[in-house]
Each structure stands twice: as structure tokens, then as C-alpha cells.
Amino acid sequence: MKEIDVKDSALVLIEYQNEWLDENSKLYKLMKDKKQFLDSINNSKKVLEYARKIGMKVIHVPFIVSNDYKEFGNNAKYGLRAVIPNVKTWQGKNKDFHSDFIPKEDEFIVSGRIGASAFSSSNLDVILRNNDIKTLFFIGYATNVCVESSFREAHDKGYNAIVIDDATSSFTQEEKEYFLKYIVHHFGATISTKEFLTLKE
Image (cartoon, rainbow, N blue to C red; front, side, top):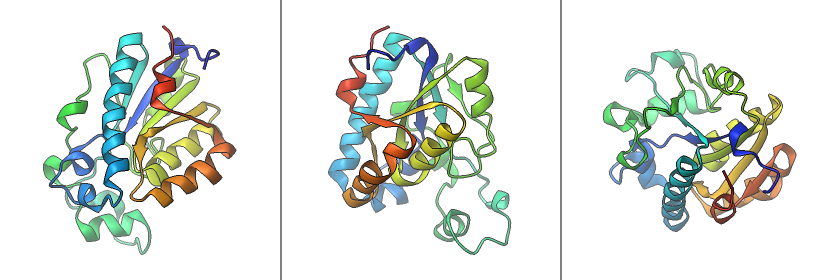
């Protein structure tokens, strides 16, 4: 961690919205490994607070679609474009940022995203390049879906991609362990919240 320069690094928060974090939401209830999930929320709070303290750039990546899901079109037979309209997630106030993770005025909010990756059709890459960012620390939901998709694409776009592994959660422990054991080393690295908190300004 000593070689990391916080001046050209950014913390990327993926989907810290009510759909995941409100106890009454559908995705919250689908999290089968509640300990992993609740630990990730607590660690995410620590990571965000520390990133702000040391002056690291903070980038919030929401998932926002119309209530009628018109962005997905009518032809999707498989994957998230088919599943999300069927289960009716990401509706109304569930698209709002959770109260514990409201962006501050000097932080970035990514817009235009329409796919699993934080880069999909969004302005994230432009934000990063305009601000000379080289290293990305990823936290958020779900580990093996949107975090993994973003992590892979970050690598392919030339960024140093790092997942803060205990500040993200999958639906099950098995899903997360598979990502950490078989996927991560192809595209970047992982660290713990404790290691992130050792970064210096």
C-alpha cells in the first residue's frame, strides 16, 4: 500500500442506494448472508469517512432507470435487462442514495450508466481522465455482479483496480469467495478495510 498515491486515486462507491440498503427493499431482503452484508455496510462507512479525511476523490455510481424501464427496450430475454423489470426493483425512492451515503458537494455523481459496469454508457471514464486518476478503489454491490463488471472494465481501460473486499457483499458467501479466489488476480487486487485505513495523505 505504500506505493499508492491518494492524489491520483479515487474511491468508487457502487449503488449505495435504498434498493440495497433500506431494510424494506427487495434486494436487501435477498441478501442471504446477512452478516457479510451488514459487515460490508459498516466497513463502507469507515472507508468513505477515511477517504474524505485524507482528501481522496470520491465517486458515487448510482443505478437509475425510468420506472417503466424503457431504457432496457422490449427485446431482452436474459440477464439483468430481463430480470429487473420482472421483479420490479429500482422503483421510486429506492433509487435515492441511502441516508448514510449521501454525496457531498465536492464529490462526483456518475450519470448515464445503463449496464452492470460503472463505465457502461456513463461519464465515469471522462471524470477519471479529466482528474488524472490512475488507481480505483471499489466498494459496493453486488460483489460478483456490478462490482466485478466495473473492476474488469477498469483494468481493461488501463486503471489500477483494487476491491476493498470486506466493504462489498454478494448475496452469498460462496459467490463472493469465488470472485476473490478465481477472478480478482486476472484484473487487479484486493485489500481489506483495515489496510485502506493505513493510506497516508
